[in-house]
Length: 128
Image (spheres, rainbow, N blue to C red):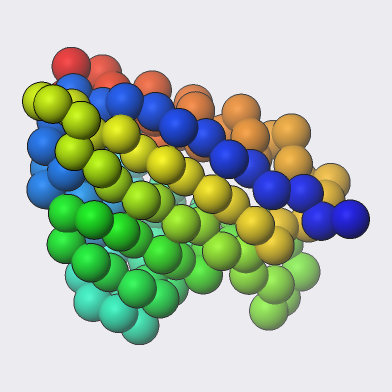
């Protein structure tokens, strides 16, 4: 049975700022310290962490939702998972409800920890 990663994190910034960090290459790079190229449109290409991650934006709803076809560079050609970021205002913070599905089973533990290490911790520090 396919596994799913479900994570919820609170970031001390508005949904608009968190959305920008997920959809603007310069903002993502400033937050994570990693190279990023992000085409900010549905269908746009995404290259993160110096090409280690490739994605394509499926759905972008400013300040609310980012859905990407997402893959690690070492995956079999043509294999994409779905990464979904739902952004909800929570006082002065943003609650990010994140779901990742369709990835190779053997990648579960690395991905589950990787989202915290490569996304949530840097974003929390950047905005904190």
